[in-house]
Image 1 (tube, one colour):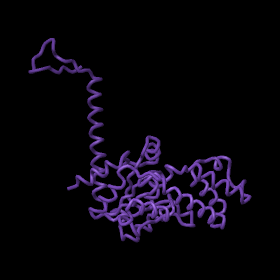
Image 2: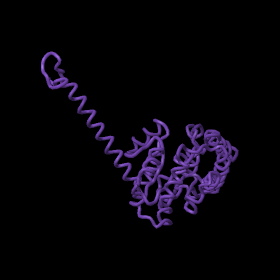
Image 3: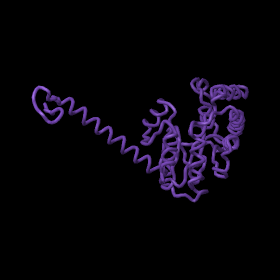
Image 4: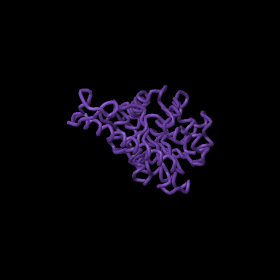
Length: 270
């Protein structure tokens, strides 16, 4: 037990008794404060040091399927496959999955580089393009993109969505000049989808960027894995606790729950 005097260092009945539990709590609080300060400094360094920024599209830039349900798109792809006589190509779980990318991946695994995959990917692209009209901008994404571009960073889109979809959305937000022509997305070679680093490497090569001078912003473990394989530092964006847990569990160290944090760092850099 530790005695800690109150007031002007007088002793007596007013002396505060600080228990070992209190001391431990204070030590934990100190360590927590120091850890937060360290993470903040690390994030600030990553943001201010980046000369090239690679944005995933659906998540960090917008919610593509906010008004055009991804589950409905997945169901459309499954129904199209069944009309082609391919009901048995998917497992029951894959047929019911709400993510259309799961359907695309599954078909590509079983019919790689086939006409079926080409047609399915084209159908998915058309659904994505329809979704652009009702997509929701991610909070603070537009000003962050414009600010990062204005301070001299070069930006690229590196996404598993179709490049046509990203291009159409950016044009609708008057953001094309911040990225063009560096928009790299899904091709017919679906084995190049993230976590394969193919689209990141294409962006780095086009920008003439060393991986260590870049920063990848993504919202999924596949983004993190692609960044790691490309040797690019990674910043996770998580719009909810579930997304944050997925990123943390995958090993992401730097994760923000709002892009306002990154925008503030850029605006305060000078």
